[in-house]
Image (tube, rainbow, N blue to C red; front, side, top):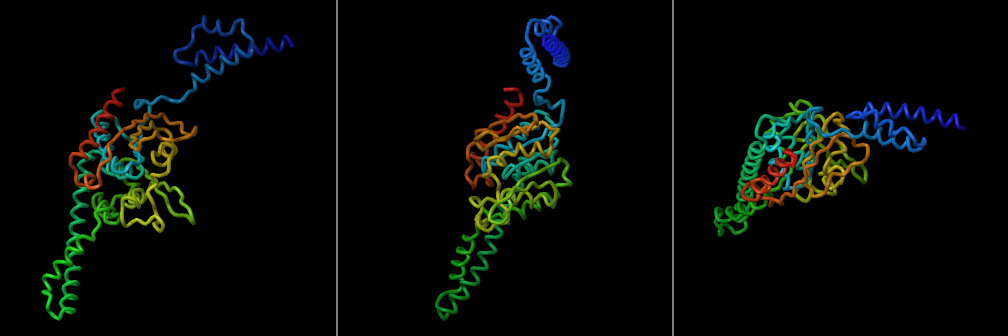
Length: 338
């Protein structure tokens, strides 16, 4: 019994010495002797376990050691803050090698990944202006169609008593007013033109996004890493509480932002890019949720961004600028180590 204990202790002391050399900085000979001498096998095993943890703990977020992947959360109109965050990242000269985004994070991240050398905020403004122009065009077209119809019907019913032009004006206003300013199909079409039909698998920066897809009576989470960029982003932003033409009971694809894990897709980002740091810009208000299988070095920047009114999301103004500034300033401080 005594010999077996002695052998076990000798083996453990060798292991202590080996781990002492592996840790950084290595332990001194005196420190190794202190740990090994005068303690039983159980205490030595505890020391080995502690040293093992030091030697093999989670890697540190270090852009010099590995590439960095930008992870952008959902968050509705607060996603304007993510535009400011990207500008702060650009100013810090931190290189972004991949992007994963959900919902509004997919929209912002997709614009960045498609043209990383361009100002992402200006690209978003260009998209917004094009969308508003298309909405106005659709409003005029619908108004004219309704005006002609109402004018003709009114003249026929009244036997010419009602002036067709007067009735047509009423129809025009009615038709124009029926055009929703939050139209999912219109936005996806404008986005496709803005990114010139780009495909995810052809982007200069690797990109992935997520959406919910109807499956039987439920939903399943789908990750898009190839195919039409506008379609993938459109699927991720298909929110029935935002867009009038997205029916939660019938839509084939839906925004996954209500899924706690997918809302800030850290878990999926690490699975897709396991060799990367994850720089997470989170505007949903709660920290990212992930389990022990997520082993990527992580830096999460929580941004308490103000909610931007829907009209200001596309039209700009003080609310837009305030949200943008909150994202920029918080990210700039975080990247400086604050």
